[in-house]
Image 1 (cartoon, rainbow, N blue to C red):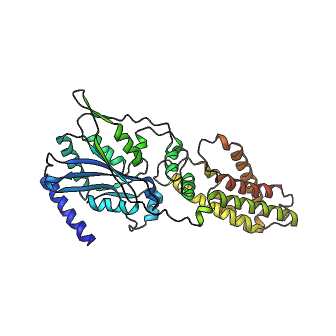
Image 2 (image 1 turned 90 degrees about the vertical axis):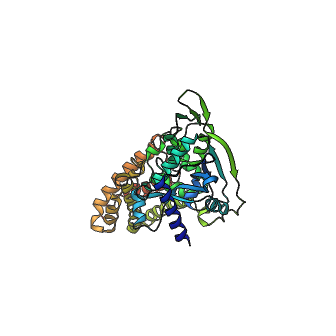
Image 3 (image 1 turned 120 degrees about the horizontal axis):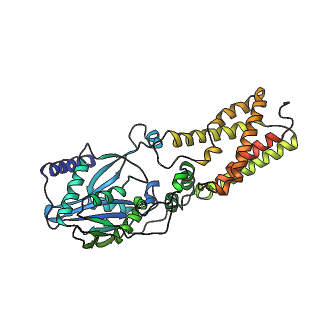
Amino acid sequence: MRTLLLALLAALFTGLATYGQPLSDEAEISLMTSDPHEGEVFTIYGHAALRVKDPAQRIDYIFNYGIFSFDKPNFIYRFTKGETDYQLGVTYFENYIAEYQMAGSDVTEQVLNLTPAEKQRVWKALLENYRPENRVYRYNFFFDNCATRPAAITERNIDGTIHYHYNPAPRTFRDEINYCARRRPWLTFGCDLALGSPTDRVATSHERMFLPVNLREAFSLATIENPDGTSRPLVARVQVIQAPEVDEPERDLWDTLTPNVCFSLLLALVALSVGMEYKRKRYCRWIDVGLFLMAGLAGCLLFFLSFISEHPCTCPNWMLVALHPLHLVAAILFGVKRMDKVGYYYHFINFAALSMMLAAWPFIPQHLNTAFLPIVASFWLRSGWAFSRSVWIRK
């Protein structure tokens, strides 16, 4: 049934695009923004779409630039590399609202104050975007997403200029996304780990419209300067489609075992291992093998994101000082007793690098998640202990 409905809808819009059927004087175009809600990872950022309503033509559709599929080949690799392709989808207004009603997310409709000619241009632009050869686009979380596209298509198709009287307090890109993920510490940790220092640039007020809630506020304050010098508000009227309350998601184990808790426990275990080795005068090489193997794998991911992927704001990333692919080589060295002397020098270099990193921690031009500190301290402690062991070379 769903496949048939999509096929019929695609055929309908192909016909409309072919014949260029104009909208009637009753037509309205609205910005639809849904509130963030707990559910999937991507729902905590909210969503934005455009509604085209024309009772005379029996048109009431939502144009949604946030459609993607997990079923595409190599999705995880493509997502990591920054080659995630989203597409423009079209659905009936009732179906779109029903989805957010079930999720407990309110949807705000801002009917745009457009002239008939402007509405027609936006309508034609949307139909052109929906053509099979145009509907897929390369998604970019900060600069080309479900919120930036409706803003851009509105800006390009009006007579005059939109002035956004939206001047919020300065915030960085990281501030914005971390606020959205404030109830998900592991998601915040992952974003802080993957995104480098460019994410800590203060975003302009227009750039901050990449988040739907910011776009909604910006539209509510915006005015259109007409060619004759007069102005009009961008939004004619607002209505909120409220959703029934839904049960809060149950807390699970990872809500308790936060990154701070887990990596503080790691630091405690590393300190305990150093104490036991000191007491027993015995080196347990498999501790270093395991720790540096994990650090090397994490470093490979950071290296890939920083230097190979197309994601913006990932390079430079100062966590590469602590987590980098060379740790995989070190893990092999630590597992071979004949390579202890080389391993000793590796520990010396690592200890020196991490000592400088810890000393410069407050001055590093990148937000470092508080959970990073016990991670870096763990490897600093193991390398410092190895460096201090005078019997290392003779073993």
